[in-house]
Amino acid sequence: MLSITFPAQYAILLSNKDTVPQIYYGDLYNETAQYMQEKSIYYDAITTLMKARKQFVSGGQTMTKLSDNLIASVRYGKGVANANSEGTDSLSRTSGMAVIVGKQSTNGRANNFY
Image (cartoon, rainbow, N blue to C red; front, side, top):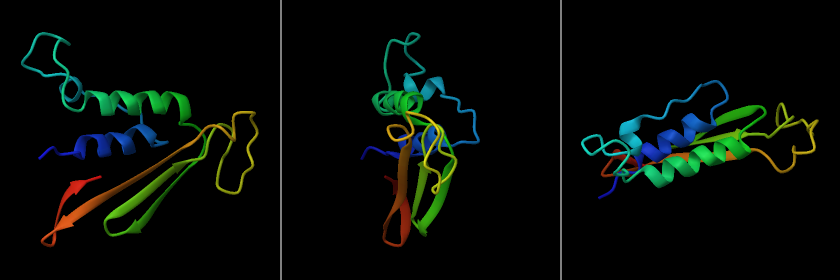
């Protein structure tokens, strides 16, 4: 079964206001193949998240624990400081990003992120 832990972790990392994210080579490419010749199983998911970060991630942020197995992160958009702000930029209404990450529990054990 394919683990989707890396993309879920990168979704939080790449949308977080207070980080300077690093993408690790081994998460994008097979480390035992020639340099940048063999994409990893996570390549498409991580590069899509990188593009979304560049296009949509700006403004203030709220992270909320929705349950023991579910968190949500909202970046409000360019010029929007918080949930009550209307924004100061023409892109305020068309930028921003929401990420929801949870753990799937099977037999009482959390084993996958989605």
